[in-house]
Image (cartoon, rainbow, N blue to C red; front, side, top):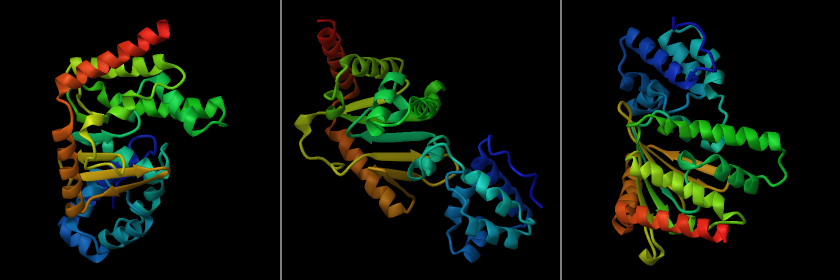
Length: 278
């Protein structure tokens, strides 16, 4: 029998994964052996145990039958599925929190992990022009909670390629973008993040179809995530991960160096500050 029911307020997916590992090892099964009757790979079981994959109800029911856990995983599957993020992003956000390395290409806006409160508020207001202030406040609070992932001085490694488009979209209040860029510059100067700008002069490139996020883990295979308008997909198959990794490597090869990127980011921020002051 697995442990007591999980508290949904304390990383339920990670706790559920830890309980799965204990129950599987107690049953004397390998990850591949447990995966076989579920028609999934051993690496998929590893991702469930690491918390980088969500356990769906059909798997939970079957796992209880195989491991003899008395309905534990079936009962707790719903708690582990709860998220404060949209359905299309929930799995990626929870995997992001467990990653040891995150590499991201941002084609249109400052990535969520790097956003200031004012910038996040403008973004959400643009997404939801008729939402109440309470709704926007909640969305902003969740985004800032995500950004706290970078409060650790060393983990995860965060490497971002920022399209120059992001720098050239000041909106009605250039100060908001200027402060957002200053925030990125501070993170770069304190060596907390690696940042490169992909300039317009780079021309066509390997990720013109949209954003891209690559995540690596200590005890689970890597994942990649691509996102569109109200949609997103998490990939773990090796061929797709390899393809996305190559695309990111090509981006970094065509982007400005971190030193030149920092100079450009600070220069653009200064331009917006000067224009606003004038």
